[in-house]
Length: 134
Image (cartoon, rainbow, N blue to C red; front, side, top):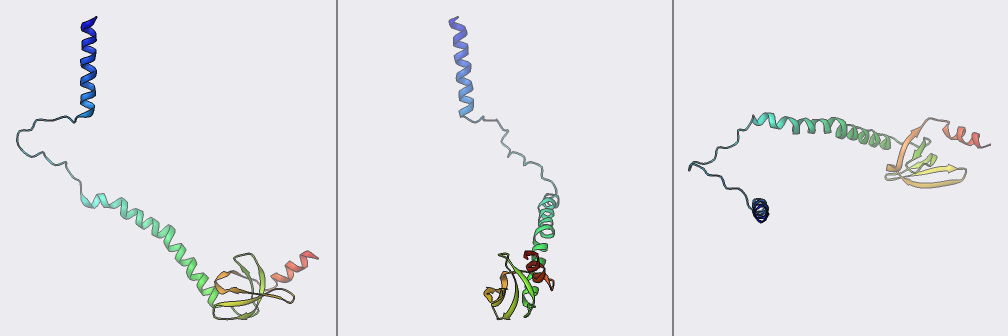
């Protein structure tokens, strides 16, 4: 029984030692051969493909929306009915360089930044909304 425990202890000791130390491999004095590499162009196909996908699915549509919003804000005129990003519906009564005056109810006007305009509504939207309350 003592001999079998001795073999078990020896095995456990070798197993622990192999975990803590890296294995040494004998070489014939020559430098180790480099791993074979593939075509460098083939390894670039995936990253280039991902960049193209990001451009067409994320960057390009966002820049188109930004351009459309910028054109819409530049074309704002007095009398148009708009909705702000905060959800206010009103008619433009005055247009300035950076701010517009928005009439949201009879004799109630507020000043908002031009960039806060979310959408230009069709004419008559305010009448439809006020008629629905009555």
